[in-house]
Length: 255
Image (cartoon, rainbow, N blue to C red; front, side, top):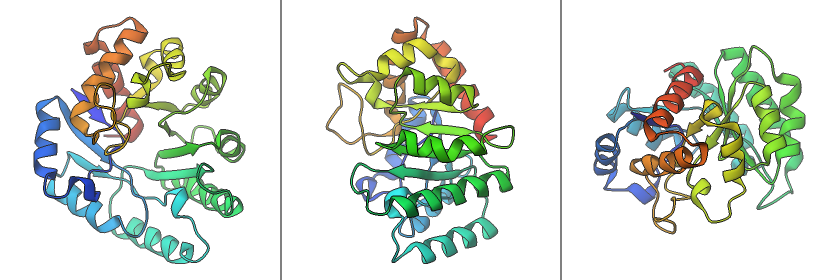
């Protein structure tokens, strides 16, 4: 059995097909799907989906870095607080720093990332970290917070092997998705070197579908395709990848 540790099944791309997509995932052996929040717009659809599939679709609480904007952050933080007081979540996520699109609000992104990391420590929850063109910025904030009170995953891990070893040494997992199947992906070297013991599987659906589905809508049922690639890179069976990565996810998210 597999766990998709990062999927945005509540987005509009799945409108009218969510029941079918969840069924396909379960039929493919993916029996749990973890839902990271994005911002104010995603709380309602995410929580409605989780309510429809209790124990299968499990929500996180967080503010995505691209939604960290001066004009809305006060409302975003107020809603995050309200949700955490009234609901049950498996992690703080998706949080982090994104410098791919815009560096204008880097200082604010750093402030809100630090706040959410410290909130996770206070609540005893793991973190799901978004890192895009920002590994050094993320690491500078995260490193002082690492230790027994903090664990989590670098979602869609973007780094090289030395960065991966830093992450692993600090007790974090690498989130591996469809990118590992892309041609000439440097990520393949990282996965082969670290092995499945430090990996959890994810789709980031509807984005980043694996080869040979690249360019189409991604979905949790494609986790076995990613697992098959990981198995080949690590020289182990798909069953071993399923067993190890599922155990890693269960331990990380206290499932």
